[in-house]
Image (cartoon, rainbow, N blue to C red; front, side):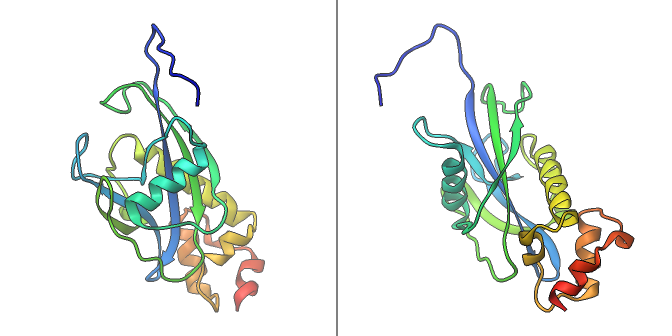
Length: 192
């Protein structure tokens, strides 16, 4: 790495967040952490944190997820977008690069670590009132998941337990706000 250069004008900080979805205990869940320190101490938030200066964004998202929850996403994660409203972080100007992932059906134990007091798989319909602008980021991630489910991506099908049963498919569609009449036959036939 080259010698640091000090600019005369302030620069924003960059963070990465990783929104993870899983089907656990018959409901769609997302992974949240309870913040251990200010700002927003004690509030639920998406796993994430500051990007190291010599770190790729995806690597930073994966590192923060592992540090805060102990979870490692084995497969691909998708870039979700960036979130950069002025004032979104009371510590200063911060831009977040968000990623999203779907875990296959199964057990995914988590634990709080680093600057997270605890980590928990929260039912998607209860994941509200999050720190920072994380409600907005979670809404974007849910729209990303909705699109993946409706366009038959393999990881969208892998989220469901086997055999895939009609009530489970309808529950998944309800959780991501897709109309039940739109349940594609491929989804019902794939695991039945």
